[in-house]
Image (tube, rainbow, N blue to C red; front, side, top):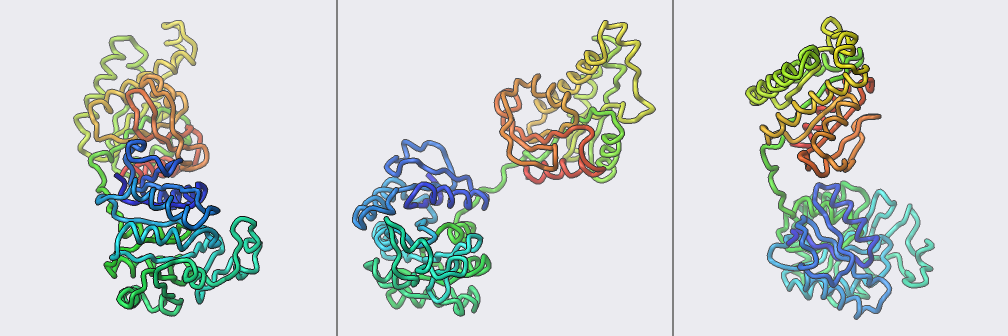
Length: 434
């Protein structure tokens, strides 16, 4: 069961609020059908967003759909409820809010903050302005399905809800969270069940959210999404980070000057437990190759407690230790590409051996496209779920399928980035794991 349930009057609004909750760090899922009960939603999540497609139906039908959604998805595990409304106050605001208050009981109030600062929606003196224009003067007022006849959100609510409503204005918000919490309690004690609250900035939304949390009064968040995200961060319990998963493994095989400078910057700037792969041992014979891979793997596993960054680095990163390919090309009957592949697969075997022995390693940084490909080929990785760009030509993602499924990856070309690029990538990976 989710810890937070959001009911939205349409699917796009549902997804918009879901994205804000996701950005706040909550695992969020949107149902496609409000009537789908828990059995149809077996995936665990922090926040469940349920669309009712009720903006343009009659008030009674909207009420019934919200009540049905709450009947399917409310429960003792839910710590926070929210009603997502249109950012321009279209739809059945009153009847849908009434459905929440009826379903949740008399101890609940509804706190309506129809403010979306990044979209130019603010509310002052209960009047909603859209990019500085009173709502009634915008094109929204002439919406053929849901026309708007007033700019005053408080009057709009007062005309739609069966419960007593009260307005809280901007000066009262700016008095601070503690005084605002007392005012919220006073309005509730006077009988108000619906509070329409002014806000202009993100800071105002944070103040109102803090006040609601301080008041201790069970409250339904009613808004286009930003206030729900603010209040959710205060009311939804978060799981502590699971440990251990915070170590990373680096496979550094590029031998160009850029990669060399980046590697030196990493070793100088961060605590790294590093071993060096001797290229000659990999190329001399199959037996010496096997022993070199075993040596590197065993040493890294033995020393894994020394730091959060483990690394296997090709000895060719030092120009003085580079091995000429020509004698080995003749010995093995391979061209330079074939010899490189032999080296790259050795990096992959060390990487997979260490990760198998060290489950506390949650992510891999690799430099050089061929080494990255060799690691995923050896692991049987099906694909990478790409999530972010760490810096140009360096991506962050999660492995799908194979023995490294679920591990985080940052890969970068050997010639990519400035001297600190490798530090940036490993810092990014550590931060996201921890």
